[in-house]
Amino acid sequence: MRKTVWPEHLFKPAAALAEPSRAAMLAALLDGVALPAGELAQLAGISAATASAHLARLVAEGFVAVEPQGRHRYYRLANADVAAALEAMASLMPRPPPRQRPGDPSLWRARLCYHHLAGQLGVLLRESLLQRGWLQLDGDGCGLSRAGRDALQRLDLLAADSPATLRGRLCLDWTERRHHVGGTLGRDLAHGMIDRVGWLRRRPSSRALTPTPLGAAALAREFGIDADALDAVSG
Image (cartoon, rainbow, N blue to C red; front, side, top):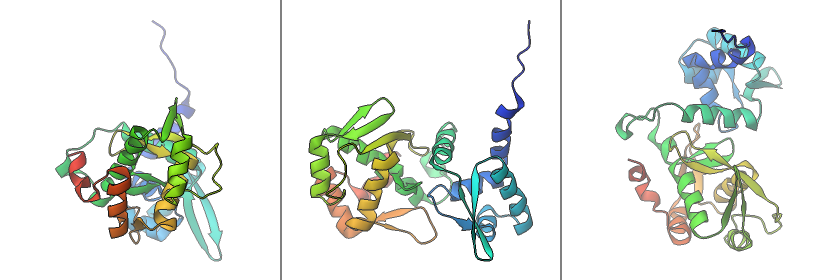
């Protein structure tokens, strides 16, 4: 029987991600922020020297890009494709029981995933948009119906001049194992909820998002989402 020999380049990216400290630093960058090596080292629980070596490996493999800022160097994910790939790979891991979920539970409820809304709230929003006929699926992509665009503009979640061709993609949520809305549409919706209408607020030094009192009421009224019950949604 002929033995299959896989090209070495197929395994190099996987090997780069297999190290827990590197994986932790990549997870910290998933919301699109740029962070210095010292902060990434602290988040990963390793020394600055070790972090520098890991970051050099991630830059070489094309996962991370460097942005010089004066005397400092900031690291960010190389692009949105890397972010999508990281979320997809995380979704292949076994999902732990609710009481054994890693990290801050608020990240499971609502968080930024490279500029779009993820977690339980992101998944529930997609489902609500579909139920109302406001979101239309097309393979791995999605777009708004005319009624959906009009409704989201009325709510000021989308700008009045948002193009009719505004598109998104279905992003498999690694904590919920269901899809949320990514791409340009997902980015604009998250921006609308955070910056335009103030329904959500960012938690300092975290990807977690918290509904404001105004937002909790609006999410229930407009989308049938009980923000206070998010913990129980996927338990």
